[in-house]
Image (cartoon, rainbow, N blue to C red; front, side, top):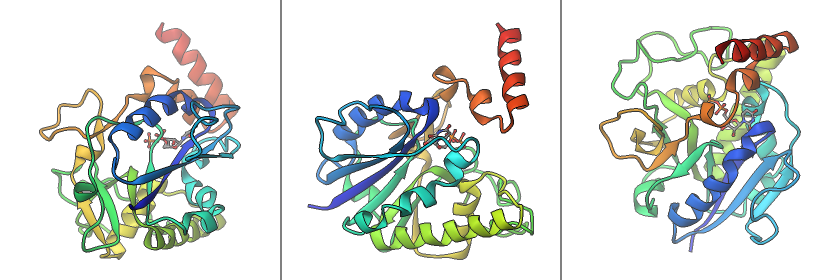
Length: 256
Ligand code: UDP
């Protein structure tokens, strides 16, 4: 039986998504594998953490926006020694929810090491329209006219050793950017797209595995990306400064 580590961050308000994520993944995600959840959170308690020994919770303070998502590889690699014991590792955004059975046959990489998922907003566009980082000073830079896929940051993974290598490479790139005062356009998503552009060890899955709620996509949904704004105050979470947070609150009050 394959052993799978599922990497999951829920700092700040994002713990609201954990219960439905967990219940749906237990039921539908790789049902024939032994799944372990690596949860990085500042929540005092999360659903089933006491009952299920396959939930491994690590205290992670909220780093603010965008470090809560950008610094994911730094968080995960602190558990590298544990993660090396698995056959496969997959990252899932907090607001993912499995909708239907996802088998090893359809989801695990076959001939390659890594799986990435085409972004639902770009699967039918050309690379000129992709939301790649166009800043040559960023390590996530991709020049115009290059690149075959635009993939989402919210669902990816693969064979454990290969995914650990990917995380180490992207952690390094993020550290270089930080030293140079650069921030990739779409944070971790820009970095993973740069990885895809510079490697060929991956297989590409359709947007069924990154299927936003309320979008009218022509393919069946397997992993729903739940609409965050129905659950959390997204503008507030993503404001980088205190004044930005205050403005977000005022905007919300005016909108009512
Ligand atoms: N995240 C978190 N706390 C935050 C912000 C982000 O735990 O305050 C984590 C969470 O796992 C989330 C992921 O980072 O799913 C990506 O952030 P988000 O979904 O808001 O980014 P987007 O998908 O909008 O680019």
